[in-house]
Length: 500
Ligand SMILES: Cc1ncc(COP(=O)(O)O)c(C=O)c1O
Image (cartoon, rainbow, N blue to C red; front, side):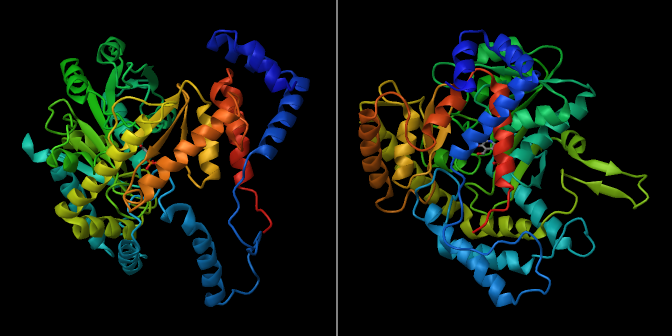
């Protein structure tokens, strides 16, 4: 039995805090540490480290003479071609949200025209700020900014995580506290943890209710005089369910704290789903307690990767996001987001995606995704070994009491499907995109899922296939710090230059 197995046996019997403390203590013993290191190595050797398919030259240092453009382009093209099948046929959860080749070519054309643009140099590229201001205005209008007042402002960021990080910075700086608190449902995106880590927050994660939605009473009890922001998701990443934003934001308003709706996933879907007649609870600026939101253009906004919008009720909050340096020897410096230089081309691309898709385009895309969601959810519900978690629309999580769900995920991977593994409870999800709305994809998913469940059942309750055993162990291993250490070593592995 390995040290990890042995420790799992012992630690799993202990309360989580004690397990962590014991693990931390044991790690300080050099011999134990060496044994753990060699076990990490062993586990990582068994972990799948994807390589681009085919033979590709490896470069650990620059060629002395620059290579001809054709040769470099050929290498880049070969890498892209080898990966197309991974996402184009609709077998991945989320990842590529539009993916139609004509749409991609259009975005690429726009990108190419602005590839040198940097809004940091406003004098050279004033178009960058035009794009950004208009993207923010269009997104705010979509999220009903004008229904209550027109004081909704924002910025474009590099993605959902940066939007969330920026909003949390704004609340912290506005409060003037060194260690403010955020109250978030346990289902909130890990970007809030990142923000807490960077900005010195104490994070209060509140367990969700049996329907996987935020528990309003429990969240209200967690708010105290240090709380500066309460969070809800529309919908949350793990289970795709929408938190009770009206109740949460009213509660935050009554307690005099900010409220952030994380609509990174749903911001460009729910407004259109509501218009199509789906039962969408309010989540946007029509609710007076909602003081900030995040919505990702690089997901269901169908832009190129690398943009999201963060919005605030009022300039004061946005001011607290900005960074200004009036005394730098390098000159008067200001920057709205984390980055210094920013890719103006991505602003152009997001602007172009909004204009080219238009309201009709988003309505049509949303209709297709909602219909695919209903078909896939219905099909999963018909598989007796599986149960859908909560009441989702298009990000559908499911678990099982009869088969090991990570084994099902591994069996689906053998059939070409890349799904997301979830923890607490063990489950998997698929985030549906326009790729899955293509003819035949939903039917193929359900048929493969039925097969995968039957195959997993045949292997018994212990996960056996591919990464399933490691995933299962990592999901349940009581000393979470050890899992964190393993993940850091995994990232190291990804940075190794691998011979083709
Ligand atoms: C609800 C939610 N919030 C935030 C994020 C973070 O977005 P990104 O990966 O663009 O940083 C995601 C990503 O899937 C998400 O689903």
